[in-house]
Image 1 (cartoon, rainbow, N blue to C red):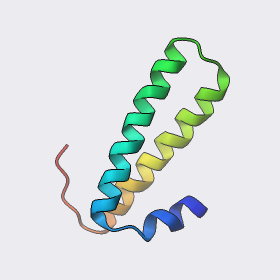
Image 2 (cartoon, rainbow, N blue to C red):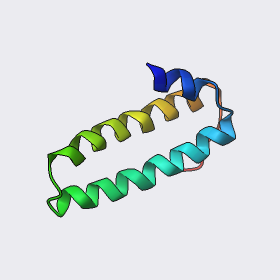
Image 3 (cartoon, one colour):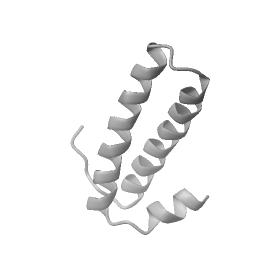
Image 4 (cartoon, one colour):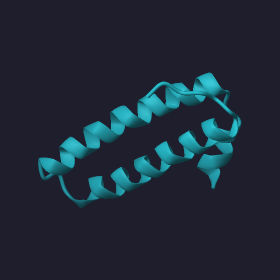
Length: 68
């Protein structure tokens, strides 16, 4: 849970920035998987999705209203 502790220490603005970064990375990884880049990318996709969910959870707990 090293990632969760790191994310909990960030402010709401920093979490928003991290969320954007993870979403960009997720898009890139999905393209790689579609292109047949291999199985190592599928593990990264799973981890990135979980990180996005973690950030969204933390933002909700902090009571931050987000524009989708």
